[in-house]
Image (tube, rainbow, N blue to C red; front, side, top):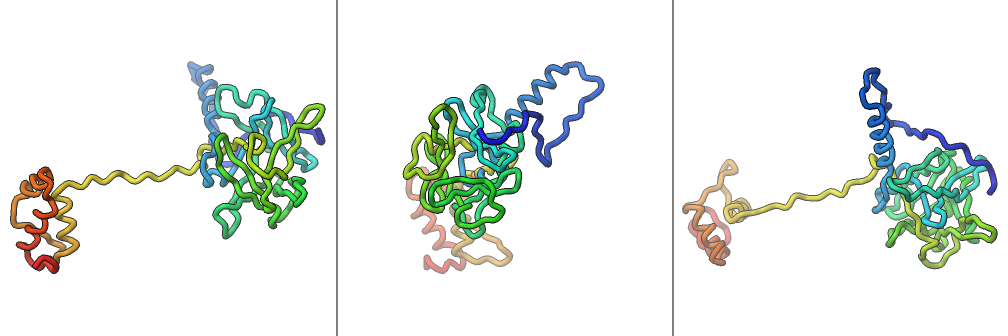
Length: 263
């Protein structure tokens, strides 16, 4: 395996909060467990394109599992991490295992991947990958596709990124696969604080009186944004239960002032 991999150590990111120890602490062991649990929960699985913007940890469920790592020679190394899928969410241990994902300007589906050394991940027409490009061109663009089990990355030549087992042990990364399979499916993790939340709209419950009020505002005009009806709202609710709400509303509108469509 070319190049040396830096030793494991505490990995921090810009913006992370410092956890200062209090002098008077009764449960130091509980505090350590809480910090370890918080650290494990810091990286979550990507499940949508918006999650691929920001710091990323790219892994593959091979045997043993590997993650993408950049060595000091600016080479992409599939680094083995046997304890990757043990209890708790996986997380990088060194900055060389972190990549920065970003959308290509003017595109909603193409992304770039930049290493912690500031160089871009690319693949040429022969499927040879490198991580030493300083600028973005066609060969630095990737199209992620979410499939069952993870994410597949397609390059500019319509070939897929893959992990290939080599003779004698170890793995090699290349980008010349024609279809998506196990070797072409990666598990990508992002920091939880950067994960995009899906916006859910609250379900609107419109009762019978609300339906009539909407109709009044739409079809009738009363000065000063005022609207009124001539009968009790209980009639509307009863009509809704009996299944003749539309007919009742039409009759009521015909008896009200300034209706443009019922007279």
